[in-house]
Every structure is written in C-alpha cells, then in structure tokens.
Length: 268
Ligand code: CUA
Image 1 (cartoon, rainbow, N blue to C red):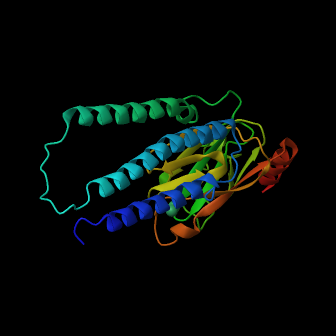
Image 2: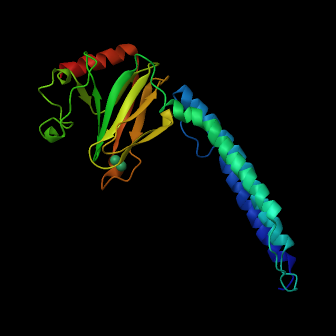
Image 3: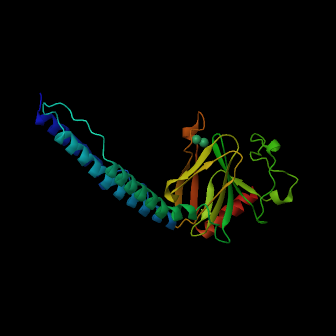
C-alpha cells in the first residue's frame, strides 16, 4: 500500500502500547526488591529511583519520537530524500547525554564509595568471608580480636581446616569459622571478601551490596544493618556446576543473641 498512513499509524500505536506496558510495570513496582536494611541502602534506592525517572522520561520521549518519525516519514509514493544529518543536533544530544550520565554518576558516587572506599566505623565487627566452590566460610577473630595466620598449603576441608588455619599461630586458636554470617543489629560490620578458587560473589539484596570475590584479592566492605532478620547471601558469578546452589544466610540478631552465638561457637 503506497503512501498508506494506516500501517505507519499501526506501528505508532504498537509502540505506544509497549511503552505503556513497560511504564506500568515499573509504576506498580512489579519487580520491587525487599526493603533495604541499611541507611546506605535507602540512599541507593533513592538514587536508583532518580536514575529510573530520568532514563524513563528519556525512554518515553525517544519512543514517541520514533513513533512520530515512522508516521511522519512514511512512504508517500515519492523518491527518498538524502540527508547529511545535523551537526548542531548531534552535538546537542551528545552534550545532554554526557551531562545526565556524568551527573547521575557523580550523585551516586558517594553512596557507592561509602561502603567501600571509606573506613568502617571504629569498633566494627570484623568478619573474613572466604568463598569457594560452592560454599561460604565466615571467620571471626575471636576474643583476642586477631585473625590467625592462613597457610594455603594447609587448606583441607575434609580434615576440618577449610581455610588452612596455621595451628602454630596462637592468634588463630580462638578464631571462629561459621557457615552462616551472624551479626548484631545496629552495629557496624566490616567484611573482607576473598576467594579460594574462582571468581564468586557476595550479594545480599537487603544490604544493596554486591561484591565479587576475586582469587588473590581481599576486598573490604562495610555496612550497619538496622533490622533483625534472616537474609539470603547469594553468589551471582557463574562459578561452576553448582553455582545455582551456592548461598548462605546473613542473620541479623539482637546483641544478646550475638553473644550467645559467639559463646556457642567458642564451645565447639
Ligand atoms: Cu560461587 Cu556462583
């Protein structure tokens, strides 16, 4: 159908329809994450919302523009015109995109950096997180507050030394190794994330934190949970056959329950 407005109009309507569905799914929070349990998590959510509003408006305008172009430049039975483009327009949208992109990044940088590039508050509970196919180990320094030395040649999960703790180092005698992460509520926690084989990940949705565990690196990460509960820790890096089974739990408990946990672990 030469010069037909009907086809162009149909494509325009289809575009509006898909834009409408997409906006609707976001507007009703169809993919809503569980509420955050840290103040940084709340800020990250605000940042995410802001980014979503800005990119959402750009998305709607771009799709409407596309629909308009499809309709306006439809086949009218005349030969196509050649155009060399518009330099001023090219510069304008490059500058606008760059400004928005860098602006959002700049606004988000502090929230992101706060959990990684600043020091944890003094008195933070330190836990070393070691990941390997397909488990998590959480090591607490014990009463002396010092982590014992690790010797990779001593790593042996079957004999009960999955981390390779050196038995000759007195600092390691009271170290506690657990399979889940237990921390007291409203207390700063500092993790050091490491891996014993391939790249894994430490992800807790409620903390809004996701960090790779990279062999040969120890990555610090800190947070202060403000709600008691049990939360999933999952590995989000494809790390082998049982990657989908690789998870643990973050237990945020009362101070009294935390002391109980330590005493029970020490007794073992
Ligand atoms: Cu470890 Cu996926």
